[in-house]
Image (cartoon, rainbow, N blue to C red; front, top):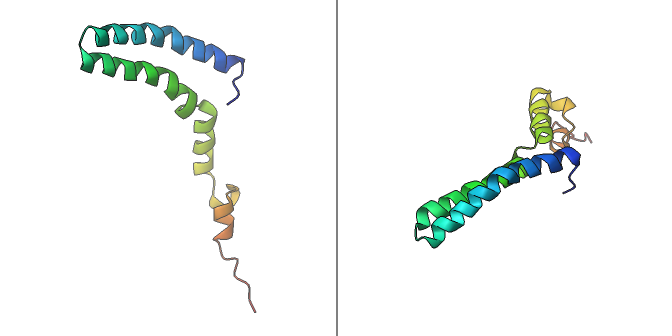
Length: 89
């Protein structure tokens, strides 16, 4: 995955908030509070992973626009092949 300048800034902003939370989660794990530490560690990881892989604005916009277009204009290979390419003999 190639990151542009804005992607790197977004990743840095996510890490600014996720790293202290992950640090606190590790402290809670070593203190014996396994459920709280593991839960906070999952939240810290989600703060970094979700925006990079699942909440990409370009992907969301592309899926939204392709859902609004008629099937003929979507450019999907599946839609073009299933519309009746029957060969008359």
